[in-house]
Amino acid sequence: MNSRIPGFGRLDPDRRRLVIEERLGLEAGALAAYADVRPADMSLLGLRSECVIGSLILPLSVAPNFRVDDEDTLVPMVTEEPSVVAAASRGGLLLREGVGIQTLVPPRRIAGQVQLSEVPADDREAAIRAIEACCEEFSLAARNAHQAWAGGGGDLTGIKVYEVESDLVVLLTIDPGKSMGANLVTDICERLALRLEELSGGLAGLRIVTNACEGPPVLATGMVEVRRLHKDRARADAIARGVEAASSLAQSDTRRAVTHNKGIFNGIDAVLMACGQDFRAVEAAGHAFAASSGRYGPLAVWRLEGEVLTGRLEIPMAVGTVGGAVEGRDAVRLAFRVLGIESSRDPVRLAAVTAACGLAQNLAALTSLAGDGLLKGHMQLHARNMALDAGATPAEVDALTLILRDEGGGVDRARVSSALASIRSGNRRRDGQEV
Ligand code: MEV
Image (cartoon, rainbow, N blue to C red; front, side):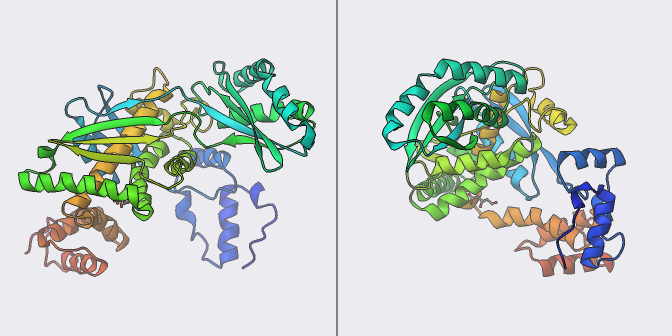
């Protein structure tokens, strides 16, 4: 197969699918399922990315039960992983009592870097001083750029020059207003590059946002009374101790910290996806923050204090409610309405609820791990996907999950196939009962 396809980007999605079918030796129409959207939507999709051949449908869910900063909220989530939304809802429920989840969203900041090479070694100190002295001039340029990008607001909040090997790096920090700010700060870096060359006598190299977190992260805290973790008090105590032990293990063991944080991002990414955010940027910043002590650690920690389990999550959260892929997308506007941030278009609330969801997700994962283990609940939900993969209809999926639940035990492909066969052979009714 030759992957060189000149002019592929200029074709329309229908034509591209034909070309790919041909190249791969597939039968005509093999990729048609990708195009199962309205023609108008296909044109839009074609404009949103490049070389589009169709769309991939992911489930959009809403997690109930959340109370964040004294306000109830429903949380839109997009994820393909079964049990993520159920877990978030369960975590939200456990944490909603008392004060609910509380957050602290510090003033939002984003920074960009301009790399200056070949600055004459003797003039470095003078160059640093000259650049730092131009703060006001750069502020004006930043404000102009902001007007072009996001309609006013925002300003340069810091300028720092530091040495990296033989280069200077200029770090420009801005208040992004209500946008996430990556394009804005990159624009500012590009606009200022020539002037920085002039001031330093060097050559501008990279001019680009840094996705690292500038300033403090978002903080989400929550607590749950131990007795609420299980109806059997002894088991509730054991689960609470298990959650604390899991948190400690994540603090001492990088392997566990990675999985612990992966679970947190199960929730965070799902909210960010639903809200049209750049979840890769939040992930990159989150993992860098998790390693900021010099050793990769957990983003959320849990402590057992008497009758109460207390959790604390810290995470950088570069989100925006204007600009980028956010405005003009109906699905994102709807997600904001579900979140109740339509009128204020408020990235602070979005950051708060997203972090809260990460904390709830982590609590749900750790209580499962400390209780019955993950697979029991997860595999019941996963059974639905396995049933669909095995070709079950929606009615058969329901019957199949009932059978598997009633029979208990682990769920695997063989059991799914045999349960499906027994429904189809008439040995089981569609409500899962034996005939
Ligand atoms: C699964 O997607 C995520 C978990 O493994 C997270 C964790 O172990 O904390 C359940």
